[in-house]
Image (cartoon, rainbow, N blue to C red; front, side):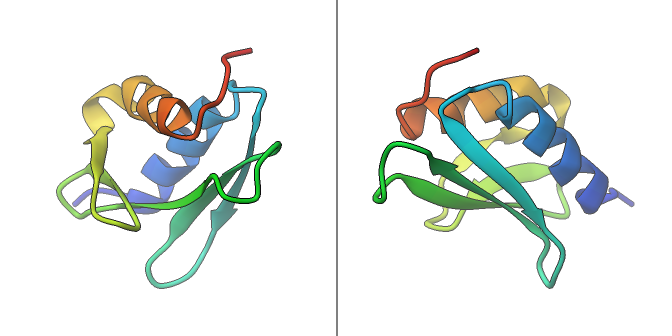
Length: 85
């Protein structure tokens, strides 16, 4: 069984390399990662991890899987108009 909380924490770590993003892991049901662009009130997203290992946005967009967390985080950063560190 996949440890989704661990995967979300690793996703959050990968997302934090993008300097324009503020990232927070939220315990709950379901656990999630809340990400926002520091320079925009409109650019924000909540990401969850499915039991199958897919990172999914609040509007159902599949960012990627736990097999390539860095790519999934980079895709979210692109959607939120963030620059890498």
